[in-house]
Image (cartoon, rainbow over all chains, first blue to last red; front, side):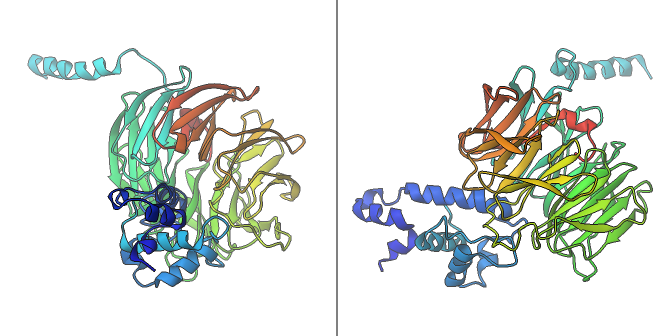
Length: 109
Length: 390
């Protein structure tokens, strides 16, 4: 898998590949949508600044102890017995992977 | 005092008087939280216009406000533990402190003297002098399990008391702060798993906490001594698999209407009606999504309901006599909050992703106006100063 395809979510992957390298630095609209979802909707429990609320902080320091796969699985399937819901009905696996990666790198656009 | 000092004192007063402009009351003012920019908009609800913006309130991603008895000052509780006293007339910050690392809300005592704040980090409840914001009491929330708990659902009760719930420990505490040096706290332990919010009926008598970890609601009748926590609506999910909850319901502004209370169910797209004498279920209303707020029009005839993601572009209006949805509106992306004018002729709606407040006629449901606001969330009108539990 080329490195870039891990960086961007599902729909953006194809559009990025199709685009010239000159526009690759622009934020694809899908990334904007996902980043907005993370800040606003994840943020309703984890805080708009992702420093935590009813849910745990989503800062790189706090997420260091989890593997990428664990985070993807938590995003998609939730944590039973806690308010963390399964996002599988609303997010694809590449979406979840992109979110986990952005959060662990601390570079959510 | 010398003549010179008198003159000087008089001169110093002039700029303030000039700022204040004409004399005006505050009973028709409101405060709108702009969550992303850490600012609040002050609005005149009669003119349907903003009259000022106050910036520098920190992280307002989950913010709420209460008002001083004279309805001049708003106390805004921010996510980052900020407590800001906003002057509604001059549109300035009168005082501001950062009292904790992560907070969820607060309340003002019935006499207007104390501000209590409910904290996630470090947990517990801290109490401040409403005039100066100086700390006057701290009540750590260490549950029967010996661990520190996040606190939620903090409300004022008559007799300079407050009630709140311990999220992690599953407890409800009632604190009597008549002697602020020595708060008298009654702890009700083992009330249920993960109480996520609480509220009190408009008469200040019945405190209810919603549970996230179990199918049920906890009821405390604060008129009965000794205080006792009783489970109501047990198993309201009827054993069915709960639906995912993409935003926690809020009990603030809940719909207590005549002899009934309408509560958002958790993990079900329903409102549950509770009989306020027996506390038994009195009916259900199927809704468009997971309800977040169910707010009663002040006359109690209708309840306006908004929803969690991904149904948060919609409002449903429920008739309380028949428990039927009588109207549906789609104001736009991310409807976060609704606030009625005190007599209930209008309802103001925050539409976050449209950067807009929509104003509706509460009888005809016709849109009467719009106000531009930056990522608006909570809307708080000064008339809340006169209501118990707000």
